[in-house]
Image 1 (spheres, rainbow, N blue to C red):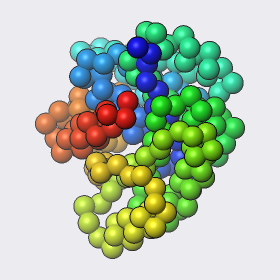
Image 2: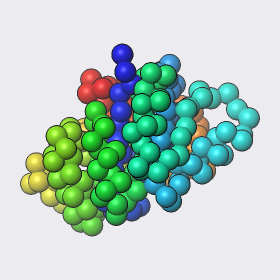
Image 3: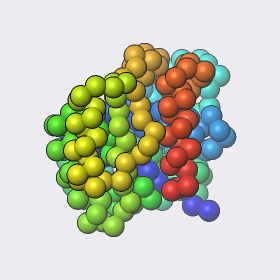
Length: 210
C-alpha cells in the first residue's frame, strides 16, 4: 500500500504549520509508523528542527526527511511513497503555486488556524484551493486558550464558513515551543503531559481519513 500524504498548508505565516506537522509526525512515529517529512518552505523551519533532531544523540524514532523545491515535490514523493507509511509536507505561506502542487498530491490537507480574525480570513484561500483540487481538508485549531470570548468568536466565525474542523485542538502551551527547540515532539518530551494527550487525540481522530 502506498504512503498516505498529508499536506499542512496555510496562506498566513505564523499559524503553527511546522509545529502541527512536527507533532503529528513524532506522534505517528511513536506508534511504529514509518514517517517522512518534506520541507518545501524556503523559511526552512522544519529543516532547522530536523537538523537539531539529527545532531542530538537520543533514543527517538527516526524520521525520513527531504527538503526540495516545490517543482521537485512530485519526484520526491514518488521516491518516498514505497518506503514509508505516512508523508507530511510543510508548505510556504503566501505561495499559492507551491501549495497547489502539494495539495494536489495530498490525501488530506490540514489547515492550522489560531483563534484570530487574520488566521480565519487567511484560511479561506487554503480551503478554496483544496476544493479546486478536490482534496479533503480539515481546520485544526492551534495555540488555543482554554476559554474566553476570543475563542467563542473564532469558533462561531469558522462555523459560519462551514469548514470541516477537527475536534481535537492544540492548546496554547509552552511545551510545544520548548520541545520544538530541542528537536522533539511533545509526545517525546513530556509523554504524559496534557499537550501529548492533545496530539495523540488529534492523530487518532485523523487516522480514519488516512
